Image (cartoon, rainbow, N blue to C red; front, side):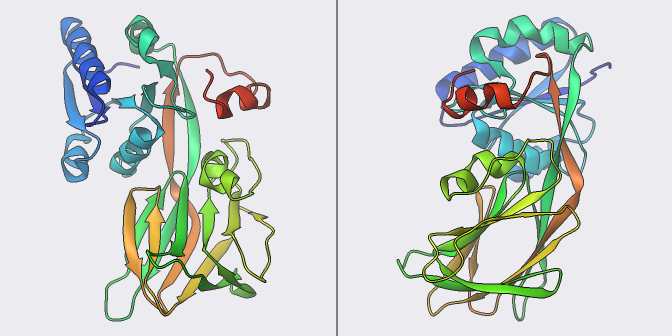
Length: 278
């Protein structure tokens, strides 16, 4: 695998992340590999840089990787995460070993780890349908007013229930160790194609979570006297009103991570990873 151009996406509020990004760019340039840098928060600029880029390095935490995933989704450019955050569950390298491990990546010694994504269509009366992609999760939740919302839920056009809750999470296997886990959902192996439906603090409505087959289609219709919110991977947010509908399915697009560590058992390292220990 030959890399002709590499992008480095950094967390803009983390000085160490920006500093490491510059060091990586200097290292790559000295080896004859052109590199560009961009803040993870500059979504439109990022998407414009991706065509013609063979690899993305991220310096930050899992949030930086999620933003990078949004930028590369149309191109399937592989990502290698370098952790400077608190958890770094999706990251591959620590900051201390990044430059030492980079030659192995450039030499083609890595392997590809593919992850499923969700695709959601938001339908609002009088507006064009919006489409979103998520590596972690789609969350329909109450807004600033601390009152429950009603979420009429069906799976494959068959009615399931109306959740009376703070919200509902639809999560990928990758996202099963995030917000979904905090809400009581199960953990799936990250490469699994199944996805999850998890209510958030339900009140007198079903409290169990569901593991859905990859072909399932979830329909969520919101009913509330106050504003609700659709949150995509924790950083794309859209206001929701009564009768707004979100249709979520397993997306055809996938995210590819380029890794250099040996592929070890996910389950044997799960506890350490959840505690932020690499």
